[in-house]
Amino acid sequence: MASVTASTTPTISPANSDGASGDVSSIEDEGALADDAGGVLKVTHTGSLSRRMMVIAAGWIVILLSVGGFALDRVLTSQLQAEFDNRLTIPLNSMLRSAELDPFGEVRFNSILGDQNYLEPGSGSYWQISGEGQNPLPSRSLWDDRLSVRDDINATETIFFDSDQFENEPLRIAQRTIQLPGSDVRWQFVVAQKREDIDNQIATVRATLAWSFAVLGIGLFLMAMAQTWYGLGPLRRVRQAIARIRSTGLNRVTEPLPLEVQPMVQELNALLAHSEKQAEEARTHAGNLAHALKTPLTVLNNAAHAQSPDLDKTVLREADTMQRHVDHHLARARAVGRRATGLSRASAMESALGVERAVSRLYSHVRFDIDGKDGDVAMERQDLDELLGNLIENAAKYGGGSVFVTMDAEPEAEQYIIWIEDDGAGIPEKARDEIFGRGARLDTGKPGTGLGLAIVRDVAQIYGGNVSLHESEDLGGLLVKLMLPRAGGAVTV
Image (cartoon, rainbow, N blue to C red):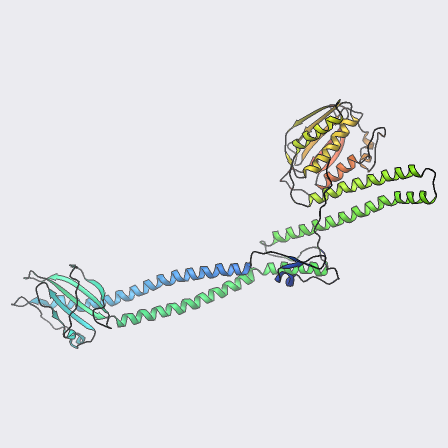
C-alpha cells in the first residue's frame, strides 16, 4: 500500500575523499562546506553574530552617552549661568538700596557704587537707570552708548536676558522695575556684564565633557568587544570540537560548556547519534540483504552448473525467496528514509477508514467494525497505511468473517494503541514470536509471502512503536496490539 520513495540521509565523515582531515574553521570563514565529492557546498548566513552585538553595543553607548552628556551639559551650564546671574544681582541690589529722588525728580545715589569697572569706559560692566519720559542715567563705563532695556516687561522681580546690542561684545543683562517713593514714574534699573567669562567657562566645560565622554565611550566599546569575545568563546570551542570530530574521528562533543550552550551541544550530539544510527542501519540492511540473497544465488548457480532437471522450479522458488527479502528490506528502507525527513504526523482514524474501504472490496463477506477515538501519530501516512493494511487484511483473510478495530484503545497510555481483532483460529502462544520472522506462515493454503507481520514490527519499531499478539476475549481469535508514538510526544528511534 505504500509507494517506494528514495531518501538520502546526511552522514558526518571524519575525513574527505582523499583522506585529508577537514578544516572547519577555514571552511566556515569562506562560508562553505566541502561535500563528499570534493566540491563546495555554499552555506548562506545572516551576518556575523559578533558584528551584530558590536553594532547594538555601539548604538546603545552612543545613545546613552549622548543623552547623558546633553543632560549633564544642561545642568552645568545652567549652574554657571545661575552663578553669573547671582553676581549681577549684587550691584543691582546696591543700586536699588541707594537710589532716591533729588528735588528735581531725578534719580541719584546716596552712596557711591564700589566697583571701579563702572567708571572705566568700555570695561564690560555697565549700569543704567531709565524711566518713561525721563533721560536715561548711565554709568560712566557706557560713555556715549546706552543699554536697550525691555520696555515690554514690567516686572517687579529681577529678570535676566542676553543682548547683542554692542558689536563683538555680547552682554548678560539683569533688569528690575521699581517705583521710587514720591515718584509716579516706573524706573528700569539695569545692570549689564559682558559674557566673555561665562562663555569661556561654558566652552571649557563642554570641551571637558566632549573628550571625557569620548574616552568613556571608547572604553565602553572596547569593554563590549572584550565581553563579546569572551562571551562567544564557548561557540568557538564548539566549532573546534566539531573540527576535531571531522579530523580525529570522535563521535561526540564532550567538552564542558556553559548552560546556555549545553542544549545546542546536546542537540548536536543527538544529531551525531542519529546519523550514526542511520549509517549503522544502512550497513546492517545492506549486509542482511546481501546475506539473504547469497543462499538463493548459490542454489541457482549450483543448479545451473549441474543442469538440474527441475531447474525451472528451482529458479521460481529461489526467485520468490529473493523477492521476499527485497520487499522486506525495501519496506524498512522506506520507513527509515521517511523517518529521517523530520517530525511526521498522520491521522490514525482516517488511515484506518481508508484501509477498511480498500480491504472491504477484496473481502466483501467480512464485517468490519471500526470504533474509538481519533488521534495523530508521529509517522508518515504511507507507513501507517501499510501497517494497518497488513494487519486488517490478515484479520480479514485468516478470520472467520468479523474484524473489530478499536482506535486509541487505551487513552491513558503514553502511546496511541490500536487493537485489531478477528474471530479466526488465532495463533498459538508458542508460535507468536516465530510468526514475526521473515517468510513465516502458519497457513500455507492461502496466498502470501509471509512478510506482513515482519514488516509491521520493523516499521513500528523504526518509529518508536511496537506490535504484540494476544488472544481476543470478545471474538476468540487473534488480537493484535499496535502501539505507535503520539504526535508531539517524545519518540525514541
